[in-house]
Length: 358
Image (cartoon, rainbow, N blue to C red; front, side, top):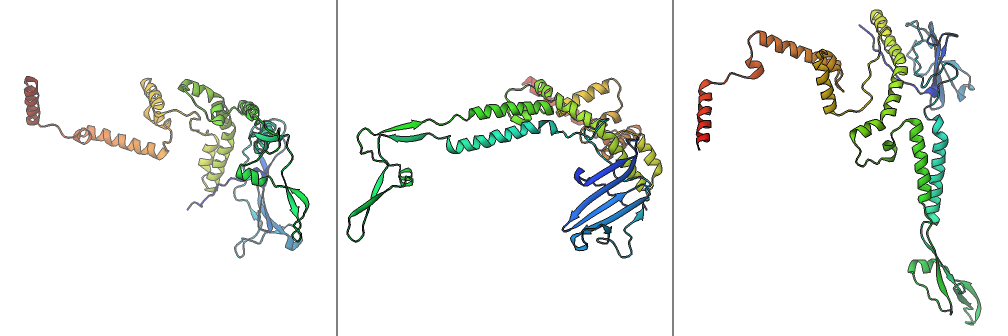
């Protein structure tokens, strides 16, 4: 009975693959690390062995053979039954020289600028977004301080302005006093610069501007498709680069199942991706009808329908075979229903004639 195979994905910060010098696709080792509470774990994969270690502050931070999570009698180091490193790298924008490049590395400075401008906008909105008023030609409001025993005035102190703000009342008793106003700051300048920066980010990452701005006004389908052309080309490029790694993953799954023949077939196969461009059902139907008119087989057309699984295609084949068998066997009624009764047809024809005469 085949053993259960589990395929997991690890973050790039906790897994690394080493290649044979001069061989960019032949893996010599793979290391995976993770942390559980106060214990760190590490698993080293080689074509011949699988080594498992752990360390924690309790043993002085030294790496020792793994004991946590193992069954009784299970060894920490075991032979590798696959004979290959079962850790596959999915590099993004791999190059002939140097490490793969991040997708957002080129736009990080622009994003930092947008974050800075947004912080300035929030700060300005807190203190400058509302008009400010000033009183000219008048002393600051004060109140007298009296001695509680004698009642004599011994000094004065400034009145808190919070009371005037909350009550919205102010008496101007001094002659010539007037009120001036400072207009609110215009925050649109920040928004315009942020908008231009966002457009640059969209251009560098080949992201449709409508995805970032979220504004669609009277955009034709052709115009919307044209705006997504850069993103579709980018996704198609990623499919080509990620396809080889995913093919290697399913090949390892076949090896783990003990199916060497299927593993060899998968190593020569290709990954079939879903169409990266979004199209409506009417567009797909129209394209499939045109392909059918030039003689493309039904099975090939069914594979192009979004969301259709291989199991559904097999079921459709069975239904088509059953329908053909029913036709050859004379069971037309099973497909189109029972044949109408001639008496019913005569009655319907008479009713139509009476209706026409009326």
